Image (cartoon, rainbow, N blue to C red; front, side, top):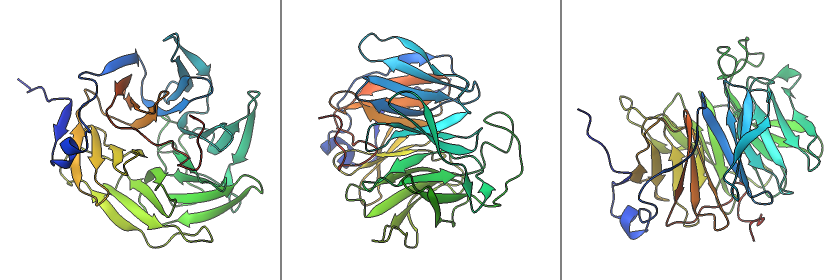
Amino acid sequence: MAIERPLYEALDDRFRTGRCMFGDAALEVIHTGCRWAEGPIYVPAWRQLIWSDIPNDRMLRWDEVTGAVGEFRSPAGHTNGNTLDRQGRLVSCEQGNRRVTRTEHDGTVTVLADRWEGRRFNSPNDAAVRSDGTVWFSDPDFGITSDYEGHRAESEIGACNVYRLDPRTGEVRLAADDLEAPNGLVFSADESRLFVSDTRAGRIRVYDVHGDGTLGKGDVFAELPPDGPGRYDNLRFDADGRLWAAAMADGVHCYDPDGTLIGRLNIPEPVANIAWGGPKRNRLFIAAETTLYSLVTSVTGTHPTGPGHRPWH
């Protein structure tokens, strides 16, 4: 018989002293019935959470005031990751349509980019917006390897990269080309470093961000055991500089700024994506296979667009 694991698992005393394990005693189920839940993003102006159900080709929304869950968009281009730009507009990575889009305040959809050097992207996965308005996104091949999360196709680029997009000009630049399958990405608080999960390699890489917007050589920030159940997906920071990582069957990992794995949240299903939200930014939303969970925590998360953007105040 399987032994039930505790929700909070301290692997280093800093997980306790940092008050990372004194929130809700149990997970709250917000919605279940998805095929593969992904890409949650809390939209403060709406007091709603938007997330993706990739194989069902839809985006869902949960209303914080009423608790109601409904359809936000369908079809949705097999959307995966979502974030907000500096104006509070939704930026989405559409795996099936192989493009990055922005939902305007009036609900219309603008295509920000669908090609690099004339070749279609593989299947944009996750995005982060810097304070200068540039959109940085990962482009693995998850959406073209089968028809489950997109449409089976050959890669026109022949590689899985990270790109930098300037929405004002439409220019797309190659940012990093040394990853096997780039997935989640997030900037440090001062935007001097970019953290990227490399799913197939089982690593989180960290790059110095230069003044001209280029990246330095990527170093390994964290690495999973090759024989373990974990597989990194998206990444988020809390206000104290700890990095929280969705790690699939290994739950949610919490890393000290020095790269030490200090604790873990054990979740009943493989975790694909996490996001902070709520009026105090202390509610962690967890997209885990069929279910969207919620956990009010004892730590505060940062907004995915970084400390320079304060739509929650």
